[in-house]
Image 1 (cartoon, rainbow, N blue to C red):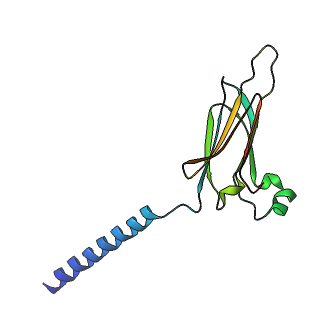
Image 2 (cartoon, rainbow, N blue to C red):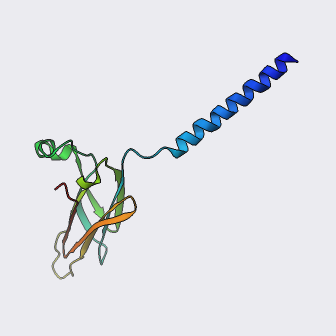
Image 3 (tube, helix red, strand yellow):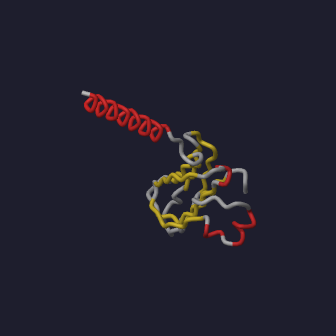
Length: 135
């Protein structure tokens, strides 16, 4: 009888620990604020886009090797991507489309969202540039 009670007690403790670990994992917060970059345009267009995905420790590090912190992609609008930055004030996005003869400008529009809140937006005929305050 004692062995059965010990096994039931051990199984109960194991189940309780498992629930506690699962709950802690579910409640874990991301490493930093979520930063979402968004690019849209009035008409479908291809863009070269540069955006910060790895936060530099300071401006000197960024200036020494910007591409260690930026990502460069060729994309079609609409487009969005989310990254995590410890300090979202480093967020920056620059998008540019080539001008085409006899075609209307695509009217590029960029946005930076921080934790679900629109932080900055900008529109231009062929380029859009959005940045937060660390620039």
